[in-house]
Image 1 (spheres, helix red, strand yellow):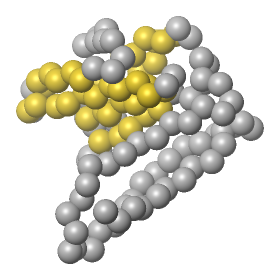
Image 2 (cartoon, rainbow, N blue to C red):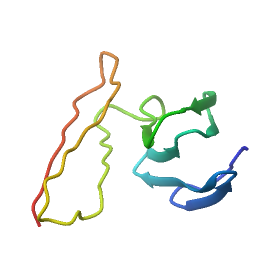
Image 3 (cartoon, helix red, strand yellow):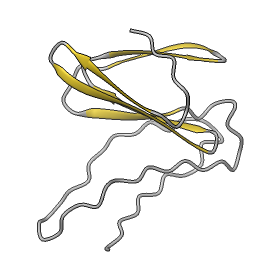
Length: 111
């Protein structure tokens, strides 16, 4: 499947094993994409075509950090408000490589 989409839109599609959500949103010059694992996504950028593939449990989030992004650009992910009263754990893997990659900040806020 190949999807051409305008930034700032939500796309929903069905897959053989159920319904998956493809999420694309533009904040500044960054594009955030939520990929359902076990699916293939082909995304065409000005630098070429990228293929993302995963076969595990859960989902993963991708931020394109190369050109046209510029030093000083900021990308942010925000979760929905989570119910209180129970213990929660945030667990994730990340890949940040390069001389100009910057920092990763995880903030938890009580509302």
